[in-house]
Image 1 (tube, rainbow, N blue to C red):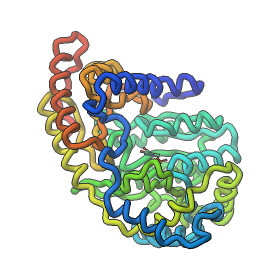
Image 2 (cartoon, protein in one colour; image 1 turned 90 degrees about the vertical axis):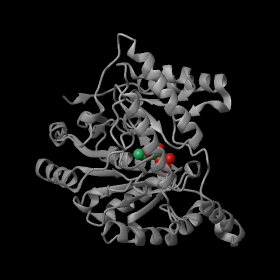
Image 3 (cartoon, protein in one colour; image 1 turned 60 degrees about the vertical axis):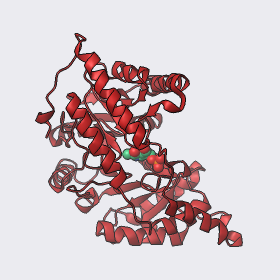
Length: 405
Ligand SMILES: Cc1ncc(COP(=O)(O)O)c(C=O)c1O
């Protein structure tokens, strides 16, 4: 079943605002002892190499370095990113294919605005669970999100559901991978299958928005592949906030696939939208910093260690939890049907996690592994104790971990 959604801002914001009230109470109750595994804020701050680059940018500053940059961003920065993308994605990106934005949120909004400008009642397919704000942005711009569930428990792309969701009004599909909240990485076969469907059912007219914010955090045994390799009508969205741990510095980009039709027109339109919105260029300081950030070696090992520890503890305690293949997250099943009620129980015991309802889904909760080791370890003990309390409740949902693999 494809869920059709036309909700008001109030109902879309409800789970998030309810969570924020809960977080506020939990912080007031537990203070610094609270194990905050809710939002993906890095409690340890950015790596030293990133801080050094930011310091160097200020020290080596030339007089015009902090003045206006062109819409779309400084050419040198765009050129360096394009060069990187040519290597990582194997496609001939040029500097104009890269449009710098203040983070991925702005990149998504610019792309959605471009769609709305062409067709104000367009539909956009969103596989769910999804990153929390896609639906909010689409709704805010008057576009119609059409939710297409991922396959239950394993969270793979369900190509049949996506095919069913395509209508004459579909203009785009948007998803993240490595996926937030599930941590899934889609295989070449899944992405080729998706590209085939988009080509055969809609003759390439559907824009694929590939949100690659988490592509730098991939665990051994998995490999990230961009759908841009298989489908020309693709725009990539990226954020420097994640792997570099500077989410508040609001820096990211859209990369327009070199294979897209009317490339010149698409790029010009996106640059113009950056201007027309008036708030869609990152600060000049961050555009300078990006030039250095591109050479920082990223290390996913600390996250992998926490992921392994938490996964083992969750499974030992009886939770159903698929191993994430990347990202900072685990997305276990809630042992009671109401995921919000479960998240409230955890918060009452000093552990914050995000309920599935903020991801347009049910029956799960997201654990972020960005808290300090000691908090992740304590949270694992609390989760084991709380499932024990749930077992004695008549609402307890018994699920076997081994079915997930
Ligand atoms: C999948 C995904 N997309 C977009 C964003 C927004 O990124 P940014 O903070 O760079 O705007 C996030 C942030 O959590 C994310 O996880």
